[in-house]
Length: 171
Image 1 (cartoon, rainbow, N blue to C red):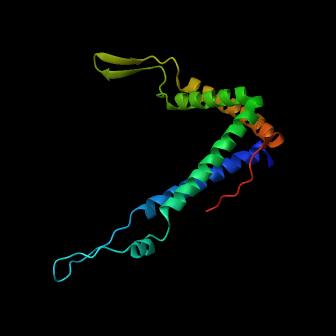
Image 2: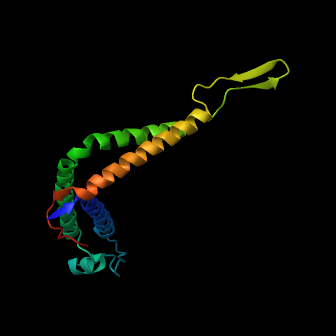
Image 3: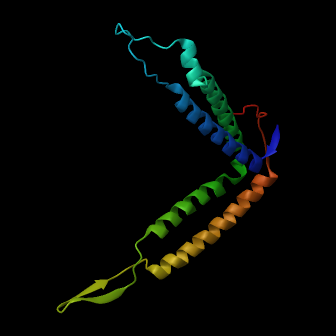
């Protein structure tokens, strides 16, 4: 099935969400516990397979098969997206690096150059290369470039297509 890259990205997110849901169901269904009391002779009667299955409600092996199917679909979709994104590979890499730089700049300690009295005989001098004014200006520049790149990538994703297998798995 042919779909826009934007739609394929949404499909990828949906599959990841389904995988998380199935994984949670596996975790909840994998282990069941019973309180078993000893009879008058001190023997314990273990639950039957039917009693265990009734308490478990969902079959972990079937859920794991569903998870494997979803995983394989996700891998196929990621490969298709990787190929389809060749036209914006540089933009995607630059966007990633700009976002990393933005995190670094926003995380810098915020100081300005100043001299302050520490006590009667000592003054504390703070010398900052990247002061608050620079940080704010650089943050604005980065956000502007990130938004422009993101808009360009979004336009590409909406107008370029990828072939993906029909989604057939559901929870």
